[in-house]
Length: 554
Image 1: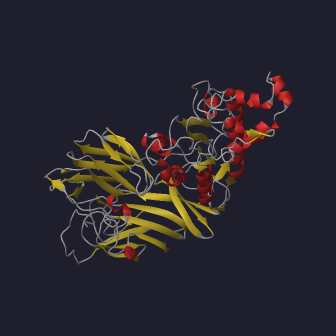
Image 2: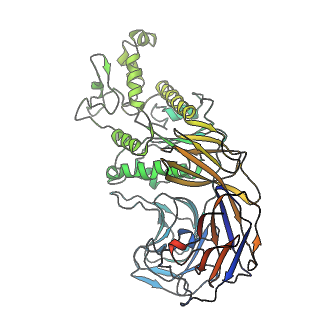
Image 3: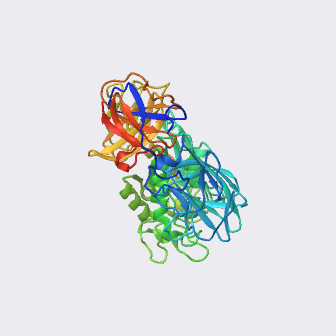
């Protein structure tokens, strides 16, 4: 590394409280014994190694393009961090790679949203294929620039056979800030969003303002799409629309299940998709998923002889799809899978079908006669144009119930916290979300982000970063403690051979990440103490144990 020039940047993350006055690089006499290479490093470098300022730029072919990672083939692995699923059968020219059959390039990334630009001769590509499931679930696009939603730690892009790839840029999308009040998104099918065939389902009733949102819900976004199952919802980009637009602290109701196998073998993939891609995807972006069971099946018979009216017997309604009143008609609309996902991820469940039964069974003969029906069964049947969908009269009732239940959970789980030293915040939490007053934390200048750490019983659950604001909303699912710290970032730092002063900090402990350019080895000192010896790789140490992240020193 040329320690007197070039781009070098630092990230200082407050661990508890600290003093860091100066940083110094000293070039060591020993030089690398092997020539630099643009091939993936097989010494298990840190994930950040292939990203510079949040961006990874790849060029493909036998030539080298300045400022990019040159890809000349090679098979993907977590150690390599990028490469082809199958490195065989590739044709490599000076400035591109192609194959006679479909081929896939992979990049190891953190889960999140990524802006992607690809230089390819293909008219259409596919990306983010869900692995190890029974259905063919993936996204497709004919655009050369798009935003990919990654939920499995790997950005994968498949190029059709006969087409070539010459360049790829992957950049982390800008983080979103929380809304003043959480928005409510609804994932679902036509039981959430349709007005066809005399139906008017619950999401549609909110869209039309037939139902007023509770005061603590800022807005409603209806993301229900008729005729979808879990795989089709993913393939058609509807899940992307949710995960690209939600902000930290937003709530998302999740229900999908009356349609099955719109994509072949979808039923076998359903739980994996709902758990790992729908719900975890929401959580990883700071949202709070709430599971909804399916709306009640209508007690109306069909033209083909299915007697759904059997759901009403002996004066009692059993329209909840979980109720098994006839083996030939039973279909719980994946309610059991939804409850299992909720249990495994510690999510709230709103039992919509059970509420419908309770409401139907609360109706009296007087209610029926007031509506000019002979009995309660005829009244309830009048709300259903078919056994799956319902009219506005019932849609308004369901919408009011669901939004009031969400509002109750927002009020119960939104802990208002203000504690800590003024330089970091540590607090006990419970429920699904916390609203944390961060007005005492540093912001502006070198601090543009806060890092949020969630833990339970002293064990780390997850971390994420959010833009600075006076109040931060964070999901707290499964956590009992939260810590929020400012992140100090110094970029383009030069001429550090003799040491430079970055600023004055409180006494205490800091986590520090160094990233450097160049190839020469160097030592790193902080306040006169060596914290890195013979650093010879870009942004890391020679071994994982001596990497570029140093913790707990004064």
